[in-house]
Amino acid sequence: MTLYDSKDTIVYMAQYDITTYTTEAGLTGSRNLHEATTFGSAGATFHPGTEMPTLSWSGLYDDGTSGSEVIVNALKGASSESVISYYPGTDAIGKLSMASGGAWIGEDPSVDASVGSLVAMSASINMGLVTRSKSTGTKSTVTASTSGTSIDDAASSASGGDWVYHVFAFTASGGNARWQVVLQHSANNSSWSDVSSVNVSAVGAAKNSFTGTLNRYVRQRVVLDASSGSITFAISYNRA
Image (cartoon, rainbow, N blue to C red; front, side, top):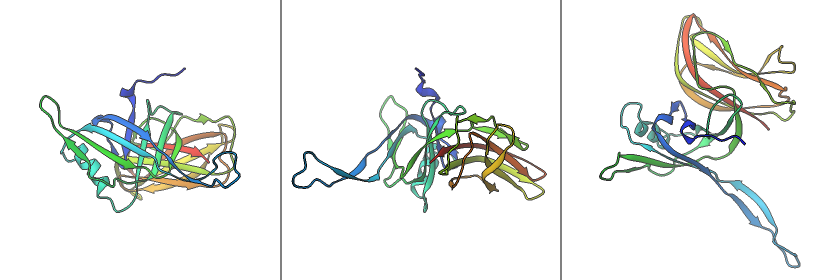
């Protein structure tokens, strides 16, 4: 049995790490089941519909330039879907991330105050499709091209998958003034090739899909495509 302390839970919203403001997070959901029972049936039968997961988030209110009020309301006012990653317990390499590339906040966040308590904030986030992803490493800051520690998934798979990246901080000067964020795989834990890569020139987050074979071993890599710079990032992936 592996037990985790809730204080080590991680929540990323787009290009923001909102963990230090978070006091509670919970992912719940349901699935539309359309009844298909007919006369003569011995029991009810159903046809599965869409999933409707929701992330309930609560935390401390902070109206600073990168505080919780700004982070949550940036998602509320977004004109496109947001990327959210929820790591229950830890974001250590190989650990579970519940990741969504289709998150929306449809209602105004709640801000609550009571005597004797800190001002609190909460939001209900519609997550769209959530994938059970695997962390390729803890949130990291690097200043040079770097490969992560490999993950052994015991076997390859042939149906593609998805990967999510969050870039929280970014600098690059000279050259192409960018970084490449890369998901790599290997059949032997020695010879590596790219599964999917993205050129990054600013903070942000995205969920990307890939097709075909994903070999047994997987790792993250970032490549400095500039003379100098730094990047703070986190990556996760899943096999379809």
